[in-house]
Length: 247
Image (cartoon, rainbow, N blue to C red; front, side):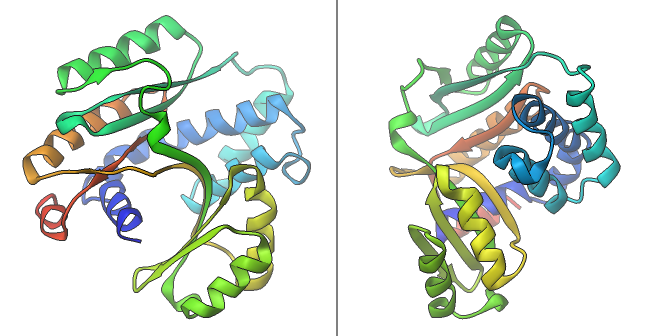
């Protein structure tokens, strides 16, 4: 749970979430539109769209925005976006995965490369750091939903692969291809989750000191500021003292 808690801390640092909120909904809209365009516009018949809509709702995205993004795909007004994953190294050699959705591959590649270089990192080849992560589904629940044994039993019955429980809550992991089915089964057993999404889960971590974390956050902030970037993940590990100092 420590890694998850620290990443959640990064994502929700005071002031940073407000900064991201203005761009967050547009990123959700893009994912919803692409998912609807690639498959059925009915979330019940399109697992990727269902997960995209659910994640948007969990972030308090208005229903009108969600409906508009789906209608954009149905009406043929959606741009042709290409999904590209970039991999590289940040400060102290931390591995970074950048997931993008772009209508201009050259522009996005140039911006991502420049952002890495300006912030103490370097962009690598595809696969250069991917081996340090596993692509998995992640479903989170608050601690008060039940004790560790109750959640573990529900997770096993739902087909999940791993559970990490602590006073911060419960994080349930499953195969990426099983996320739709597992999350549906968990909802039936435990109720609505706090978060349901596909993630890159680090299998190897890099220890970071305060100076390294400050530099890493500058890199992540700069990457996430770009409208083509959907999500950034890093395999950092840091002490509670370091994380608290970032607040």
